[in-house]
Amino acid sequence: MIRIVLVAACLAAGLTLAMTSAGAAPGGTVPVAGSGPELSFTGTLTVTGFTQVDKQLSLEGTLNGPLTSTGGVTVDLSDLPVQLPLEQVTPTCEPPQVAVVTEATPVPILGFDPVTLDSLALRRVVDPADTALVDQVCQAAADLQGHGKIKGRRLSDAVDALNALGGIWEVDTPPAG
Image 1 (cartoon, rainbow, N blue to C red):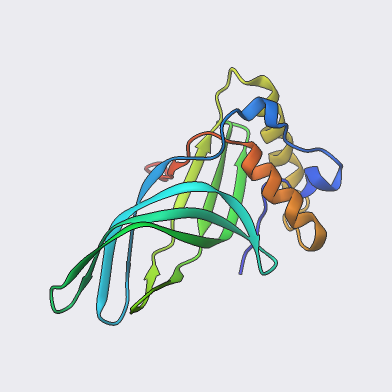
Image 2 (cartoon, helix red, strand yellow; image 1 turned 90 degrees about the horizontal axis):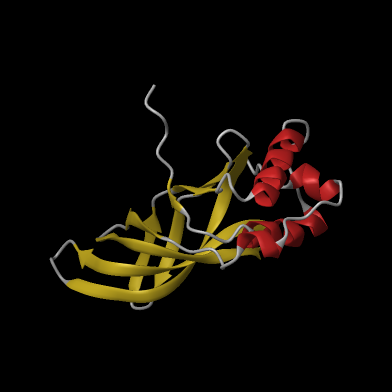
């Protein structure tokens, strides 16, 4: 499992992303889908932040939308909290942004079998006018080329750095090729 982390080398060098540059906490609402043996879900995930779960970085959010059984019974999920483990985090300097990819994740739903949410690719575009944040993301991108992984006690620092980015996370659409 690839765990490329946003600020691996930056944190090793003692740099951190400043909360003053980011402003508000992470946010954004993106489409998400998933399925189980007899269930399907198509709705939205509202990003609420990042956390560490069992020695892995995770995206936190809430699910909203219809959960439908193969028999046609529909139940609306409303603000169901979820934590989706991150498979990859990639900062880039040009354009200044951070991309994350979640793992396909089983989500327990009370009274039902788990639904496995599809992997999500999200990005947080950094405003070029926010030179302090751009510099930090560019430094993370440059440093990450030589290091690439983070583990152990630095995970909590990486969680803080991702949350410090604040802003809106949106679906990451790869460029047409």
